[in-house]
Amino acid sequence: MPQATLHSARLKFVPLAQEHYALTKELDQDPEVMRHIGFGRPLTDDETKQVHEWLLNSPTSIPGQGTWVAYAGDEAIGWWILAPTPIDKDKPTENFSTERSETGYRLLKRFWGRGYATEGSRELLRHAFQDLGLAEVFGETMTVNTASRAVMAKCGMNHVDTWFNTYPTPPLGIEEGEVRYRITKEEWKAQTSGPQ
Ligand SMILES: CC(C)(COP(=O)(O)OP(=O)(O)OC[C@H]1O[C@@H](n2cnc3c(N)ncnc32)[C@H](O)[C@@H]1OP(=O)(O)O)[C@@H](O)C(=O)NCCC(=O)NCCS
Image (tube, rainbow, N blue to C red):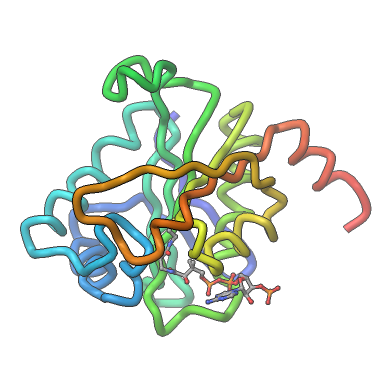
């Protein structure tokens, strides 16, 4: 199944393409967007090119999954992802699960606080479970990334794990650890078929 075009009430999601590099670069070079991601600092030009190539190519290794750019009217507001995850975490580049996916998102700051991240993530979860038939979707972020945690919780994902890693160049706040949120197909169905 090729990567689909998706719609929510206010957003249209199209597969990320080479032409979206200006968007990924603007996101990756904004200190506030990157505060709780990676090294906790804006990326260099070389790093932004590598990220864009990864977003374009890696997530589509399982048909149907990938990175989407969302438009509100004519304006691109950010990207969302459904990324295949390895069956064996000790072999991160081979044997991807066809049942399980990792989600994430990055929005331009001028669009924050309007409910877009929640709206978009709900549509991605619908697509993951209803259209692609996945069994489970999870997301990870830094414990201190309150906004991202709120988005996952509002989408019905549950906090299932917290862990503490050490990194050579850690982002500020990493001492409070990282968290994983998860939702299964059964949980999603129970939430979406019940009273709204
Ligand atoms: C995380 C991010 C996508 C949220 O986008 P958004 O469109 O502003 O989120 P929403 O408007 O859907 O808000 C969802 C909830 O989070 C809450 N929220 C948003 N920002 C918040 C913040 N800084 N602190 C506390 N709560 C926050 C909102 O109040 C809302 O809850 P409510 O409806 O109960 O009030 C955006 O801040 C972003 O792109 N950040 C940088 C990239 C990033 O950290 N991505 C995640 C990495 S894993």
